[in-house]
Image (cartoon, rainbow over all chains, first blue to last red; front, top):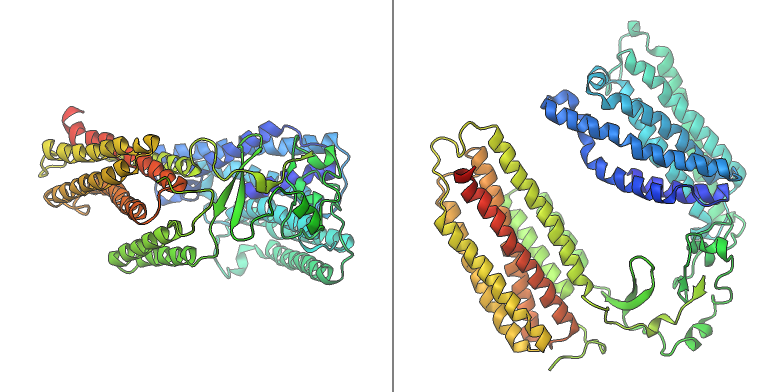
Length: 377
Length: 198
């Protein structure tokens, strides 16, 4: 869940800091490390279930190790901001919110990674506070930022910046009002998953604060929804590249034409649009240019995709891909039957898998002759 | 940023091996990791037991499973030799080797199934039975996959003209088949030899 959000932040921050991201290779390595170490994290939810000491040590170590690549990523973002000239537009604000909240969630993460501490706060509001800082701060905030960032690209309309900023501040303040007091409630012993408690527990004040914060946050999300719905219908038209971004999707129209690129732009750097803001001007919206530029007209009787070399992305060949067909749906339905069948009877699993096998064969069966694939004999 | 040649001029045939082959190689890598995890589980379970196999359970058989695995290796060998027909463009060689190899796979599956039913314990009897059935079952599942995919490829070879995509399918099938047969060796060593040797 975290990795797409980290990707979003790594794309948005350099655009609004108006400089390339710092420590690119370190960020890539850190993300790979996060993906690997994540496999050893989940058991920190289960320290209180009675695990062998060896297991707890291993998973505590993994849970603490993940702070290293996460910190590398955060520091890279901070260095990017430090060396840049940041523009505080809505997507950037959500990314800055991510930095603040993810650091807070990370700090409590180190605390609950320790088995001894975790036993004390297990099933209390401290854990609720911690994982909301990680999940909302580190995942939802970047996703909201991403929606704002790419909204002009996929609708062709600009959202209202003033409403966007208001939405960010309401969400950010509301979130902290809701979840920061929960740290204290948890340390005071308030358990999770209760709907009421005795009056003498003196948890009232912080809970009222959290409730108020919840409404403020909801208002923030509502502002965002209103802004986007209004912008979808009445927003000013968006140019190809309203944020002066560096990546290739901003070279084509907003919203993109259904064929995306008519000619394949060859990228020779990490920031193609900063190297050359108008790489393919005049290539778009003119079907004749497409036809005339080709030795042969593009085939419209089948679907193809381009395969490129792995590192340099040099186009190498066209791969033939499936036509509209029922087989993927069949296979998915059969697999669903197989997996749900596990709760009924083993024979249902076997039948589901057999049906999925039939689906795979139907899917891959060489049904269409291809002129580039002549028979051998 | 520059503009390359029009895309429709690109060739259909990939340079070198087909991407199906690379995909199957990645699948084999993942399956090898799963197998390694199951083998690790075998020894982890063994650590917690004073006697392995548990009292009342016979020591594993050495001879018959060796013969079963021999059949599996032989089947892969036949397919490897048969798929050399791709180089000489001898489609008949492939069309002959494939069903013969599949017969040997079916033989391996039959032998292994008999062996499982004659063990005297099931996956529910004890931890030892659970891991033996899991490892053995996982291996047999792979062989069933080879049998199923092999039959599908054979049907396509018989019914359809032989071209680039068919040759990619034969190459990918041979790779997976070889992988399944080779993985059988460590599984045999763990299940049948390690209780005597370690």
